[in-house]
Amino acid sequence: MRVASLVPAATEILRFLGLEPVGVSHCCAWPGKPVLTESILPGGLSQAEIDQRVRQAVQAGEGLYRVRTEALQALAPDLILTQGVCEVCAVGPTELRQAAACLPGVPTLSLQGTRLVHLWDDLRRVAAATGVSAEQRIAALQERLERVRRAVAGRKRPRVAFVEWLEPPFLGGHWVPDLIEAAGGEPLGASPEAPSFRTTWADIAALEPEVVLFSFCGYSLQQALHDLVGWQMPCSAPQCWVLDSASFCALTPRVVRGVEVLAGILHPEVWPMPPCAEALRR
Image 1 (cartoon, rainbow, N blue to C red):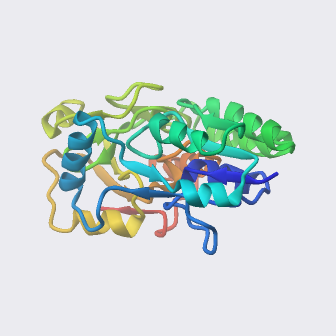
Image 2 (cartoon, rainbow, N blue to C red):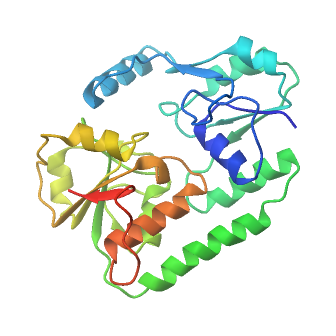
């Protein structure tokens, strides 16, 4: 089956299932593959500038991404994978309809998971659509999660603020509170399944976090560290960590590694601390 992926999460899931897409999004790290999407935002913007551009586009009813329909048509896929969770992060419904219009009769499958438990549903849906089995792989992921839960069971849960954007601050929602809970922490502010939300540092301080995690959506650890150079946090917390967002910003099998990273930060006495390539204390 020839599968086109319009979002990084779909590409990661295909890789996990042992499948190779014929084309990928502009955010996917798969050299040599045709690129099927592009962003309207120029490079080099600060987080505050990105936020402003995004709000302007949303207010104007404009999409943040475009599908390269000619490239998609040339690949003649049998299936198109996209997502329906966040229009700020990847191709949204409008762009998907445009893509589908250029390939009449080609089915599309949209990832919809917003809780950790929904990951299994998304994996099974993609597996069924592509004719492969996911059960053994899912069982292995679930066993890794269970090992973490057993290790942190009964321990005091640190109060955790998961900062997904810096200027302005956003607290991570959707599956992020589930990841913190599975790792033995108490997530603050955001509710499971509800989207990430804009807040203030005064409100974050009022939550009295014991651990503040900086994991900027779509940013590598080095990119996050760069944006934090010279920046002083307006609230205090006993611990502050900077994370590579790859294990947190999309609902893919990689979030299981995210739980393991968080367990090492929150409970280093019972779980190995993450390597400096994934997390650094600030």
